[in-house]
Image 1 (tube, one colour):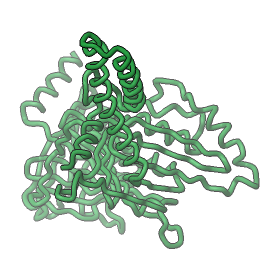
Image 2 (cartoon, rainbow, N blue to C red):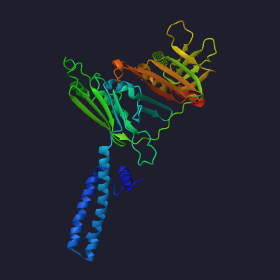
Image 3 (cartoon, rainbow, N blue to C red):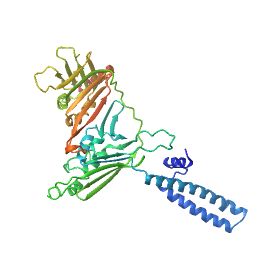
Image 4 (cartoon, one colour):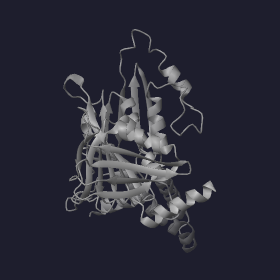
Length: 419
């Protein structure tokens, strides 16, 4: 690694020297130190004696040294940032569709974003017991440009895919002001705060009924320049351009919930609306847990059963493959030896928005009991495909099962609260 690159690495660290100097201030600090160094050098020349060496000479040398380093780091990094292309630039004509997909994720303060040449993945997690993510394929955008971050030197390995965290409520609210949604609707924060952008949306879309503007479509562009830079969202519509910059954060350690794709105990594809209705019916009993039971495929009439019990009673919903209907609920069903697992009900209910938005869902259970729900969501108005047809993407949830002791504890807790 070259000396110049090493200095840039110090710059990227944000605080290469003490006292800490912010990166945005290093250029000004370096210039100030060089000016002070020149001033002290002049005073030392006018007072050329041993006493002035300690008063003017040594401080001038230190100021010149630190000022030069600050200037080199700041100027070099600024030039690099100005010449390097942005890591990501993606444009879509429909911010509404992006918002709908992101609303399928369960509520969370922060979300992880991973960028690649095939698209970018937005994920959330809760205590390592559940995670959800949506993958926005590059085909969903009219233009998608990805430039991998260059390695520090030609001998270094390629850098990993860019990964950062962002405030999910802020991202949802930003996309919300770019859509044509009802301005009186509650904000994406769950209605806890008034919609501060309602008047903005009213003013912004006041010309919708105007025949000269009703057929214009806005463009929403997402851009990410470099590591540590904000995620910028630009919206251009009817001559009005709105730009929003969302702060990005260093990602926390993210450990994905393991799912053994080569050791599947249950795999079935069913209509997502049927699963959503079943969860809604079971939720009326205020259950703590949900139990999923699957009969072996070799049975005469294999069934998939969802059961739950709570303070108000218990219920079970069964789906069977034996039906005279031309459109059975279970399109495919594979369960070699039967399967059974229990999950915290609130974690399953958190996927209801995805259930409502999806057409189908692939429900899989591995031999360790980990549940994987993969929702097929059809989107329209995105991408640049022929004829402007729709496309589809997937929203995936993974949930860790409850062990037997946890299931009993949940039941006892519910009974105590009922008493």
